[in-house]
Length: 313
Image (cartoon, rainbow, N blue to C red; front, side, top):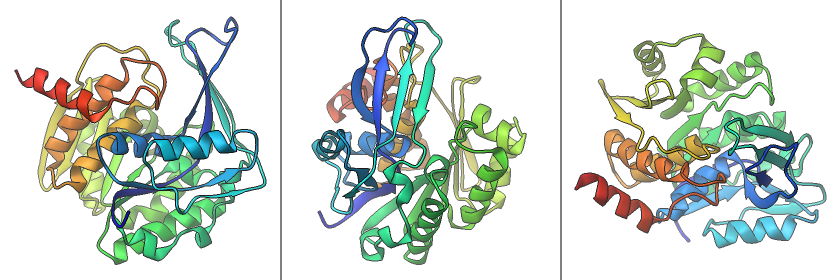
């Protein structure tokens, strides 16, 4: 595999899930997850060539995780395994309408990623590199690795994309803002959520104002996700548009934003306009939320193509 549509980095988590609440669940289904991994798999299932950078612990889940990533078609040539454990997250209660999350990831193996794990020649093979605030929150050394990856990309004319994906359970607002400002000058595409990112980090709830702020920073494309408006606001090149959610049907929205990002970036890497990319990504995310699980519910290219054809009829 010589070139990649997308290269991203982050943490591979063991996902344990139940449709019932944790109080009453008798069993938990096992899979794998993580925000950037979900994005990577979404792009891969659409036909993209995706490279993933991480470290995986040599615990009881090692073979399951490495095999799972390979089965998804991701390039794992840079992934290393070492003594340590992999993070776990539990998601439950989607049938009750009140999702529960529990994370066990402190000092996981992925938090030991450093700048040395970023191979410049490998990064040069990407059309787009992507990272998130969650990845930066793993540790100082991981944050430095993200910065190095973005610097290499920028110096070589490679598009960079970023999602703050802020969650207070991982780090403070000040830490998240500091991490963003460290790399803002390298960002070409930003994804943000009004509720979890914009209000929390910038105390802004105006889509146009937020779009203008990011564009004024030099960021070329801004995508703002809004549950309140049931859609996506896209700002680019002096233009803006609104793309509605594909469907009102929602069973489990875990990872839907990450899936959208993967589909959007894959479309951009193929030369699609931000509007076309958002329209396709809306369909992909809309299909994903109709099933349970962040990654196992991501649709295939065939399913997406069929849905788009039916939508256009």
